[in-house]
Each structure stands twice: as structure tokens, then as C-alpha cells.
Image 1 (cartoon, rainbow, N blue to C red):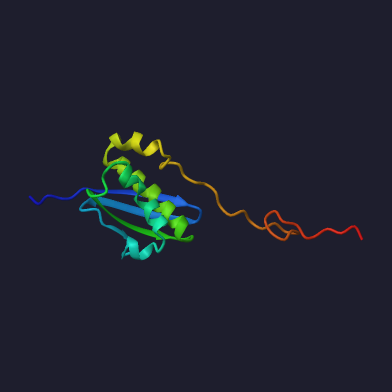
Image 2 (image 1 turned 180 degrees about the vertical axis):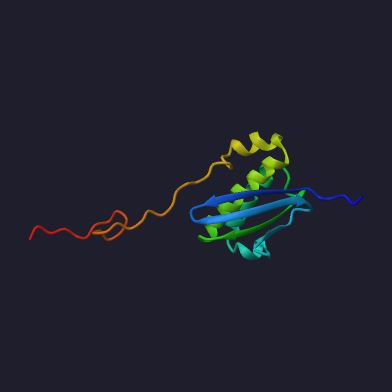
Length: 132
């Protein structure tokens, strides 16, 4: 009987970005949209955001991360991937809950761009007012 590697799936969202994350046993490779994470996330800060849950649980060299992400910009996508990785690690083991909850990696950042309203210049900005 062949040994099957365990896969753990989770979803992460941030602004309009949606990330689908799969984790499985490996050497710590992170693949985003079939590209290496360093190649996909051009800013080093975004790469650090993605890796935060793995370093918080000391599992950066135990699991491979494979994810697809759509929508938003690179920073929003990085935040969505971080939430997905944190949720996937929770499925790996409940022992990681305290290490991930304290820094706030399970918190879904619900902030989105506010829509433009009619009769106004933007979401909240108004046209210049003059009495005369």
C-alpha cells in the first residue's frame, strides 16, 4: 500500500483578494499561482507577511505551500495567503492555535474600499461648496 501524503486546504481573504491554500509535507517551498513566491511577490515585505505563520509555529521547513490567488493587488493577496496558511496550519494541528492567535493571524481584515456615492466626488469627498 502506497503512503499518501496528507494535504490540508484553507481559504484566506483580504480586501478583494481570495487565496486558496494547500499544505503538504515537504521542505518549505512556497508556490503562488504556479510561480515561486520570491518571483511572484516582488516586495520582500509581502514575502515576509506570507511566511509569518510558518515562522510563528517553527514549521517553515516542514511543509510545502501551494496556493492560487485572485483579485486585488499584491499586498492584499499576501494578506489573503497569510490567513490561508494560518487556517491550514490549524488543520494540521490544534497545538498551533495559541502561537497563531496571539499575533492575530486568524483575524480576517474586513476593510474594503468604500463605494463612490452619487452627488459626490468620491466615497466621502464632496464637490467644492460656494455660497455665491
